[in-house]
Image (cartoon, rainbow, N blue to C red; front, side, top):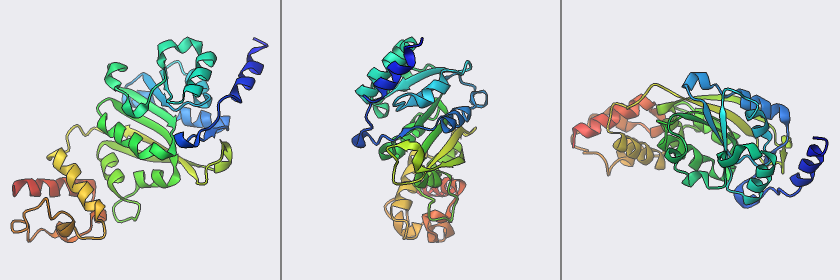
Length: 271
């Protein structure tokens, strides 16, 4: 046991943060503990958690102390993977060297599970859309994001931050901004502030509209957010039948999730 700490310290120098992977390794153990303690598996009735991009395992150390969770780690970085194999030999096949964005959750998890991570900022939106695509399995997410992305996730109608991600996430999850994290606790430090948020799956199984059309309406509305919805959605609506629809005279940022559901239903009725 006396040789374990020097061994790990020497190995840590072998794991370099890679710019192309968007890696910024968290170094503050207090913040790591706070992030891990923000997981609330009793709320979502799950007992398995997947950590994305564990790097050198600062979150993993605390995750593996939790007896209420079975922890899985996935890292695309072979250097990190090999380091973590030595650090956590007990994980076996629960340590995965692969791309999270390409991962087939159904092959690993039979039921519901949570996701946690100090997420690479260059793919943070893609991670959230991956979560949305698997919302029936992913019941909780606790993660570190660029502060600007975190603010978009929690934004409310009428704010400049409110957009596609806000609507989609809030349609299926309760989104909470937990705390802000300064750049100095990372190696290398990012040029932006960071924030930790928590997503908790809500009770919405179906939105009560054509969900494929809902996604099209939201995307089209925000892709031309300076236009009124009547103009932004011109390819999706029958103008003659919705001439008196007042919501179409607004910009997308003014509509709540429920407004978008209602508008989607009105468009469906005219087809």
